[in-house]
Length: 314
Ligand code: GZL
Image 1 (tube, protein in one colour):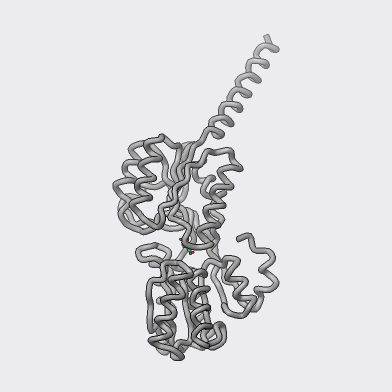
Image 2 (cartoon, rainbow, N blue to C red):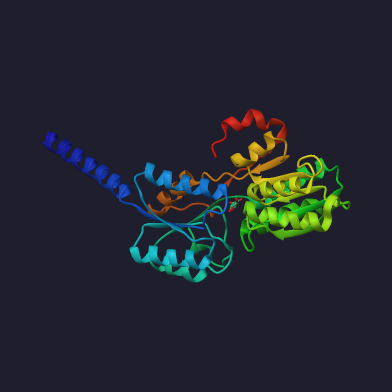
């Protein structure tokens, strides 16, 4: 009697173990990515693809080429395919209610990564895994105010219009600049988070304001690298004649700091794969998560770029 009940219990436990591991193995996840506009974005995509592979999940990937309508189409396709969860990096903050209601009706949890959305009903997404962009803007503003001794003319290269990263990085930076009456943002324009557009916009700023410009605030490193090229073409020395601070802390930014062209960059970790899939596992297990899983950021300086560049993971 005793032996049979022990064997019976062992059978139940092992069956449960096999079933749960197979059910985790069988997870299929749809990832609606924005595009490949920056090296940060590429690093994020690689992190999510690598984590799916590591956990044995099937990942259906869609590159929206920066268009919200393509992301919405991808989400609808994931719903039709009956995926277990959806990862969305929302290109802009607004216009998601309808399609997220469709995902909710289909009982498919949506995990936001890297950017946020503005919806009245936050049950439309499970959680958001992202940095605090207002904090990043404040950090950049504080460094620049200190570096310029509280006075000077700043030009701003904004990220793509409507993106929460651009909206909040601008908000946080302006909060600090407004504390210094002699520090002003003399020009601010959309550089689309790309190197090419960042160079173009900086060329226009230099044409209009030339040597009046004391500093550049770029919402991401790729635009800052474009601005550096424009400053060199104009005949000025980036990092000296015009100081530059940007956000992301990608490898290219560290190389520019080692060369002396970029003064500082605020980290915005793109390696969101592990955290994103942890949230998916909570969601499919019927558990809850905070509405925002915050990535912490810090600032990196030209002065110590040489000793830190070797340890960078992206
Ligand atoms: C930030 C992300 C931004 C990066 C840019 O989470 O949305 O988009 O800062 C990227 O490099 O293009």
